Length: 326
Ligand code: NAP
Image (cartoon, rainbow, N blue to C red):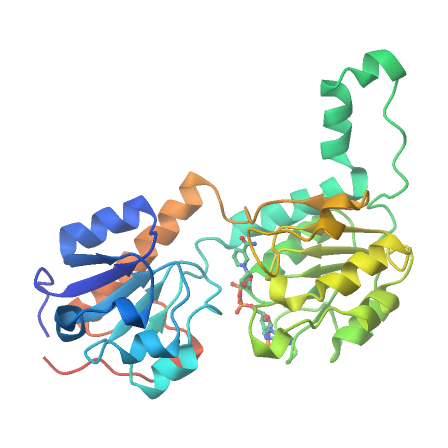
C-alpha cells in the first residue's frame, strides 16, 4: 500500500462542500464534472478515476461508466441517493458520514418539534408584524409537549440522541426498528402501525430507500390520531405526502413538522398552505461546524482507503469490499 495519494484521481460530480473540495484538491488529483451523468464521462475519466466524493445521486450507470472506480465517499449519513448495492456487487466501497452530525440533527429535531407544538415561528412573526402591539398577546397554543407520548421511527444513532433529549423533556419514549435495540429500555414495537397506535407524537428519523418508501401513510396517520403530531427529520420519501396533507386538512392528525420532503427543494402546496405545519428547508445538520466535520470525514475516508487500504466508515452494503493490492 502507498500513502502518496497525489496521483490518485478523485471525481467530484456536481456541487461539493468547499472544505471537502479544497482538501480533495490538496491531497489528490481532483477532476470535476457538471453532474453525475454517465453520458458526460470522458474516456480519460473512465481510465483514471479511482474515487468519487459526492453529495448527489450516484446511480448504477454512473458507477459502471467508471471501470477503475474503487470508492464512493458520500457526503451525508443518509446514502439512499447512492446505489450502494450495485457498488457492492461491483466491488466498489461506499462510505458515509455517521456520528459527526448526530447531535446537531437531534437538536434540530427537538427545535422542529417545539416549533410545531408551541407555534414559535408563528409567535415570532406575530411580534415582528406588530400584532403584539396592535392585537395583544399571541393566542394560546392548542398543543403542548406536556403529557405527550413520543414514538421514534428509526432508533439508530440520531434516533437515540433524540430519545435522550425527549427523556430530558419528561416524555416517555417508544420506538420501531426492524430489530429491537438491546441496549435501550424504551418500549419496542415490531410494526410502525403498532408504534403509531401507542403514541401521539411520531418522529421519523428512518433512512430513505425502497424499504421505507411511503411507510408513513394514511393508516399510520389514522393510528396516530386526532391529537397526533408528526415530525420528519429523516427522509421525505418515507412519507406519503398526499396522505399527510389530507390528514392535516381533515383533522386525522393535529400538526406536522417537516425538515425533509420527497422532491426537494419543492414542497407540495398543500403542505405550504396548511396552517398546522412547521416547515424547514432540510437544515438538520446545516451548521458550519457540523458540515465541516462531515466534509473532513468524506476526505478522511478517501485518505484512509488509498493510504491504508481501509475505509473509516463503510456502509453495511459494502462493508466486505476489500481494497485492491497495490
Ligand atoms: P442509523 O444509525 O443507521 O439508524 C437508522 C435506524 O433506522 C436504525 O435503527 C434502523 O434499525 C432503522 N431502520 C432502517 N431501515 C428500517 C426499516 N425499513 N424499517 C424500520 N426501521 C428501519 O442512521 P442515523 O445516523 O441515525 O441516520 C438516520 C437517517 O437520518 C439517515 O439515513 C438520513 O436519511 C437521516 N438524516 C437526516 C438529516 C437531515 O438533515 N434532516 C441529517 C442526517 C441524517 P433496523 O436496521 O433494526 O431496522
